[in-house]
Image (cartoon, helix red, strand yellow):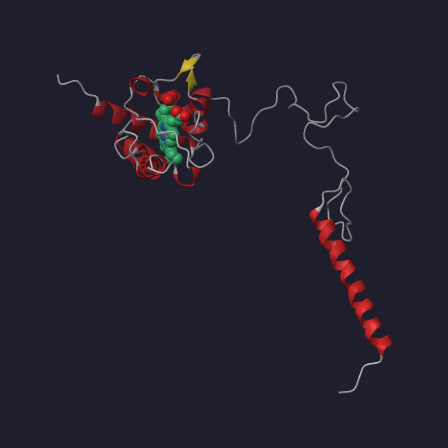
Amino acid sequence: MPQLPRILVYMLLIGGCLALIPPLVFARMRATPSPNRPIHIFYDMDFQPKFKTQAPNPLFADGRAMRPPVEGTVARGESYVDTHLFEGVAAGGWATTLPGSMAMDEATLQRGHQRFDIYCSACHGYAGFGDGAVNQRAMELVANANGPVNGTQWVAAKSLHDETTRNQPMGQLFNTITHGIRNMAGYGSQITVEDRWAIAAYVKALQLSQDAPAN
Ligand code: HEC
């Protein structure tokens, strides 16, 4: 077998080692944080002269870039001044009735029933006793003889027939559905305002159905 000239072997070895440097530098740069901006070859619209949320702006007397609506502004389309409808609050307390735009009738309760089964029953159970499938499974994982499976942590979904929840006005239920409570997430972004009220009304009906006195 013909021998490669020694000098060529050395050059190939050195060249091979040097060729490793750029990828190693890249790998290191990618893995270490840096206070500098990344190199932008195409700026797109990444850097724009603008004021970001909460940024100061010396142009205005109060030094704020974010401007409140001009006095006397009238909402067009979306208005949230109806506290009964949007916050469940009427006359300074939790509302005890549906907002004026909704009727407490069969259709509302049926809608609430259907939405409850979709959004709430997984944890609270179809009848609201806090025994939904997700809850049962989580309790099983937590109660495992060898300790919680995969470190599962779980706060049991409350029974909606508990004394405390039973006595809650509809507006408070609406608020819980909208914003969540303690370990329960809110559903304001997923369920429309009217459907949240329909669910609250249905929960009230569920409570009446389960806790009816014998007489
Ligand atoms: C992913 C599970 C889960 C779903 C889905 C869920 N909840 Fe809950 N809910 C909980 C848990 C857990 C608690 C108890 C939270 C705590 O005590 O930290 C709770 C508590 C509540 C309470 C008691 C509030 C109080 O004042 O103590 C109400 C009422 C309630 N949920 C209603 C609903 C309604 C209505 C829905 C459907 C829109 C719903 N929940 C969907 C898990 C869930």
